[in-house]
Amino acid sequence: MRFGRVPVSEAAGLVTAHTVRAGGATLRKGRVVTPELARQFSEAGLGDLIAVRLEPGDVGEDAAARCLAERLGDRTLRVAEPFTGRCNLFADEAGVLLVERAAIDALNAVDEAVTAATLPPYRPVVAGEMVATVKVIPYAVAGDVLDRACAAVPEPPLRVAPYRLDRVGVVSTRLPGLKESTIDRTLEVLTERLAPTGARIVAEERVPHDSAAVAEALVRLAREGAELAIVFGASAIADRQDVIPAGIERAGGRVEHLGMPVDPGNLLLVGSLAAVPVIGAPGCARSPKENGFDWVLHRLLAGLAVTRADIVALGVGGLLTEIVSRPQPRAGGAPDEADA
Image (cartoon, rainbow, N blue to C red; front, side, top):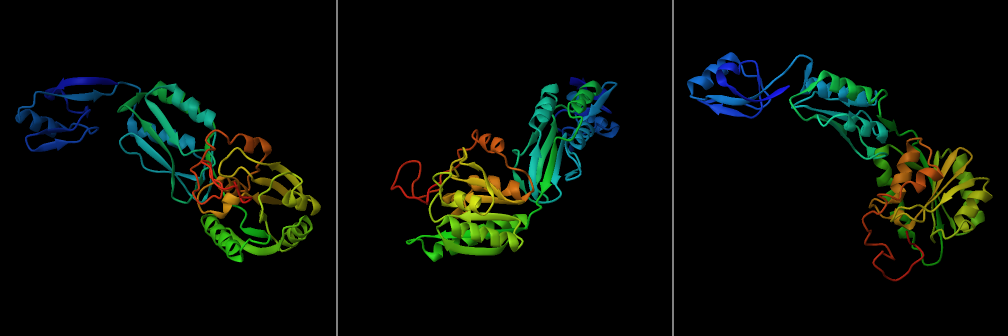
């Protein structure tokens, strides 16, 4: 591709690098100069303009952008019509966005002419949401550059894992001083959280803050068809031998991991009871504001495994906006058991 100033008399068939206005005629940048427009510009006294001349093997910006966009997404993503060297990808259904970062990095490292940007990995998305964009910087790219960029992504690095679990069971434990209205509001917040995923609360248990009561409630939820169980403790989980982890194990389940490097959300537990994932919710999950609970909840609802390795990798970027209503915010305050 050759970029530079050319006489108007030689501009027909070239692409304008900048918008041109002369003699009442306007040609937007990136458009082809027609013979008629070249004549009008010349008659208006315009001597030259900055234009782009494609060379053999060059691929126009829109065609190149579409080609790359089609390499990035699988069938869960829709590729829109390209424009001005940009081609966007949209989710076809609600779910969690999966991104192979190494492939995106490899594509962006090929040449400064081609770029791809995505939403963060594991971001919850809704149908119709834009998840990625490809932008070709110049008006055209050399064919070999496009070939190398395509080769950098032999398999689609982007896909949406659709939500698969839609039956949620909830156990809330009680202690003196915990108001029923607090539990009611917690369930309302959870219902709102689940709405974009299509999941719903199908069973709810309120039991004493006791491991035996938690165990019995979890078994009942599993029998009632819950595909995911969430336990909201009247007191935050402080140890693997505390009430909620002890209750999970007493029910025949297991605790996979306690704690996470996400704040708010530190005191979260991930476990399982047979095939049913179990989340021991941190106190901040009572708030509608984003916290570490959301990150784990959406992955599990999409049928994705959440392992210890997954959780410990959340630290970079895991410092979220403070929830002002927390009993013990980072900046200090009166300590309370219903912490992160």
